[in-house]
Image (cartoon, rainbow, N blue to C red; front, side):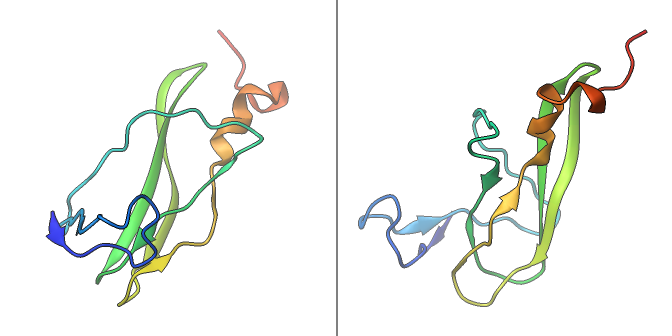
Length: 101
């Protein structure tokens, strides 16, 4: 954790710390549901280097992980653009499912 947080006080004006990830580190959010009515994720970030966003999901072949975004970080706090989480469409579109054995 580092001192400082995004300046918009999205969660609380009392927020004063943020997650810091050294090169090669990973962070995992709690599990949450994604549906066709909310198919995007956004986040706040700043720093140097590149941030990769992966999604793990349970599909017909078990747990799969795919990278859905990678971006260079800005020097100052910025909200991200919407990052589509298209893997959630696998459950509602049978034509995209792999054949079962």
